[in-house]
Image 1 (cartoon, rainbow over the protein chains, first blue to last red):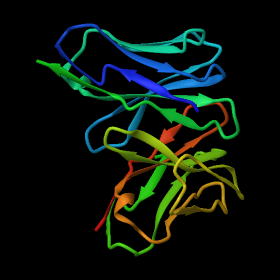
Image 2: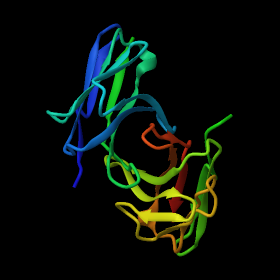
Image 3: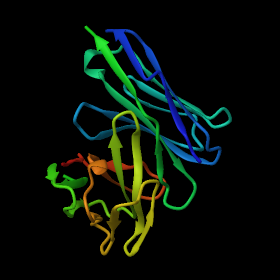
Length: 113
Length: 111
């Protein structure tokens, strides 16, 4: 059974700090990996999508990496801001029928001003 | 605006009632799916579809039915609501290997 684990479960940092969120997965046949942001009581906003053939993707202050051999992905946030406070979810898309997503439980991030 | 639209946003049901959660996308995506989100458990797949007329079960399908008569619509039916189905429900769509786009969710409470 595919499993996705996110560490840490919660993180509190001062404004301006660079931080890394971790995601590990068990499916070696990963098709893609997607990072989402979720604000309290809201839906999921896609941040970055990494295809299995890629090593990393960047958008603004965000950089996501993918290492299939070790089953790990990281989301790097540079110069964190209070507006970055949210829950960050990673999800693995498998090669099997339907490209179904398997989600981690998320990391709750709080950036203190 | 292009995207995934879910209705209603909030719903309270009594145990045993049935209802349909609506989901529509206007991006001509092949794949659509329903997830439920419960505290501390992340999102779990209920049902999914790879095209009109084709549906299959996900991780937690019991108590739910789906159909996909058109590319655009993918409704989720609760047959006889139970308190265990209190959750936030998300619909999502995707085209091939591209990332998924999620709707804003339906908060369902079963009393």
